[in-house]
Image (cartoon, rainbow, N blue to C red; front, side, top):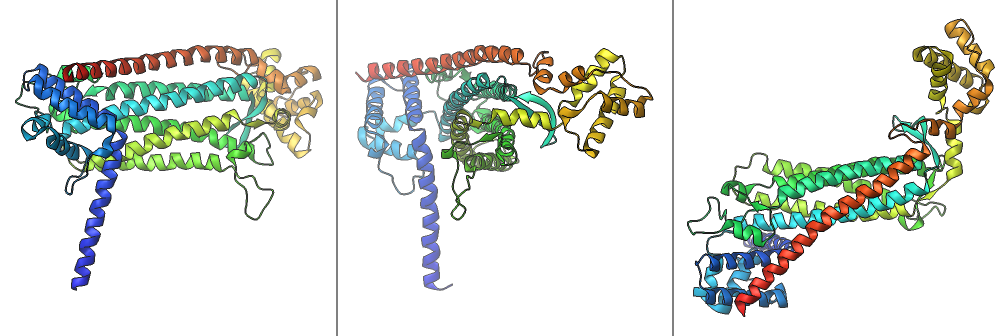
Length: 497
């Protein structure tokens, strides 16, 4: 290797190291307030346990308050120190002296501190995710109210007409899915809401720490009991990321329907212009890029979640560099998915719906034929299997002879029944017409959860109650965190003053 090549290699190594440090610092800045609260709680506990004096606690806390008030930019970044905390600790030592400032780190490690920061960040990110999804669910309820009676064809096998439903019924299906997503998020929140402080590097500390006190000061439900678990487990971030991946997967299935409905030949819906892009050559184009962006958010998230799993699949309990990569991926997933929720909410809120087209498609697509079979079972005393075979033959004849669904009559039914049963059914044309009418078809399905107008209205009313309960539950938790943060700062100010 030539001297110049060696110099270039060294420069490249240094560049890579700088990039690593820069990325770490950027992530640390996102959780700066959380890190400061951990410092406050730890110093308060050290003082209350008699491990440091009140004067020492006051000096350390006073320096920390200065950093909080002026911001992290006052901390110079030193060569060789790869995270914000290490630079902060040196700044505190410069400020109040080695003998006092050096006591900030008594009885703890970056391991338990970082895991606690990550738990606090996960709490916060799940709260933001919940707030966004609640906003989306409220928009869905409003749109469902608007479209209780908007008839559309329901599809199975991706794109095949199945049975008529309503857009309101479809949207309430999405509402229930997102309700479960938030149930998963709340469970994940509780698994994140336990405190790692006191686990130190791996085996706790010989100092008489009060782990419960730090946990309370930081508004956690309890400490993570086992010190190895406390300093090395990231399952709470896997779980939170998985919740968000499931959510965006659920969104992706709805997006696929919107993309199909948005096709010119279908013409059920059209995206608002601001969620579309233009073509550089074709002036008529209105490309649904916002939906495509949302689909990519899901595709990227599934890959990132798989990488999280692969990173620690054989990583022994204990800390190291790899867990940091997992946290980096979680941070990006949480930000990407929460932003995607707001994008999707806007798409749903501004969606242009062609009600007349929906009813027309439901009439044309033979999607009401199941009800014709049901009507034979109810009023003509034949088995469903027999009725199904008769209706199947009717559809085949209609296709062969280009007979539209609304033109099916008793003569065609009798032809089919003679072939299948060897006798006629004697169903009146009016009975057939009612069974094949999409609106009548929908309203006959008035059992629990069905698309009948009144049943959808009931689901919407219940949906508002459910959403209110969800919002209240999370609001109480947010208020609890804010109250405890205020209490923590009051204790700090009391000691310093």
